[in-house]
Image (tube, rainbow, N blue to C red):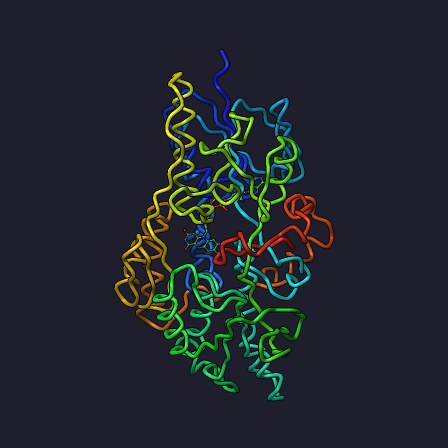
Length: 470
Ligand SMILES: Cc1cc2nc3c(=O)[nH]c(=O)nc-3n(C[C@H](O)[C@H](O)[C@H](O)COP(=O)(O)OP(=O)(O)OC[C@H]3O[C@@H](n4cnc5c(N)ncnc54)[C@H](O)[C@@H]3O)c2cc1C
């Protein structure tokens, strides 16, 4: 007799933890993921700034799931789901295929939002994928090299001005790391520029940095950023981005900031697949395109389809607000979906609704300095919070080898003055856009057909999360 077939779309936190929860279940699992690796997104900014190598934060899925015999891993982008016949259509690299399921788990994460200004992506890459991080690495280190070659002071300044848009955790971490590069790692290595003269500008439309962390930690983070030489422009809205600069509006009026290196860390929307599934099932989506799910994480009217992590919208009864797009929501959702499927196979009555346990949030600002918010009472800032950040991130990195080399690289960067991963090839700097423009079908399957820009909202998305529809 055929075993129950579970298809999982996405090998992020949600997908992987669901699969692991089904380790000993009497099911056949097919995992479809657009890349051959699992990506630990919280450390992408360290790949972009030369602290870590891409391999350290992106272990091969096959290696992660080695030994779990009930899983078949397939490379490809799920393009659509025929929910009546329970068939997924997938675009693989040069080969299209279908996967049939009895139960479907969709955990395809989030995409970047430029709030209706997708053309900003050409000159302000986001940080959602390894490609994004390597492209940014090439741009950041390249900017110092090119500045060193300029005769003209204005051009030097333009190349030495780095603008980060979005003052959530990713933007703060990114600005902090570029400031460390400029002030601590790179000085003394150039004959014609002083990297310490670099301007690092952090911009946000709201009035606080790390505004989800509360007033106290937000103020501490702002003070630390100022101490590191980061210029913070709050209540400032980006109205245009082009090759040589960025235009903003604030109470001081319209301003143009000449800058060759811009980083977008300011918004998310659900990937195109979410809208397709919503259209097929009649489910509602929120303004960021996330699917509104039942309290047991299933799509209304479709108990066989679970939606997890960044792709779902579920109200948290304890706060009255949608659950945030963070790793723990996806991890706990994955475990819950796996357990629910196991319970159903054993014909147990439906269990309790999904309950999210908030373990807290953290962000690093620089080496030895972080902020951590745990529960409603504990607020930490400074060295102790940074040590906690370190321990938590090592714990959640997948694989012993990755943990080991990550700790070594952190020692090089945080105790010493080095950056072990400064290499960026011309391909990393330029090839992705070319691939897209020349119509690489695999790349197009991932990027095309995104939700209409005017339906993407800034209000319901997590400010720390960034990604790119490019
Ligand atoms: C730069 C950055 C920093 C972050 N920092 C933190 C942090 O410090 N703490 C924290 O808690 N959270 C952080 N987050 C958020 C956290 O990473 C996400 O909430 C979490 O990864 C969501 O898990 P997920 O399983 O829903 O999706 P993801 O982990 O995004 O996984 C989605 C997977 O689906 C695949 N996929 C997408 N579409 C398709 C498709 N159509 N077909 C097949 N496969 C597909 C992708 O390749 C990916 O492997 C950060 C996110 C970013 C981008």
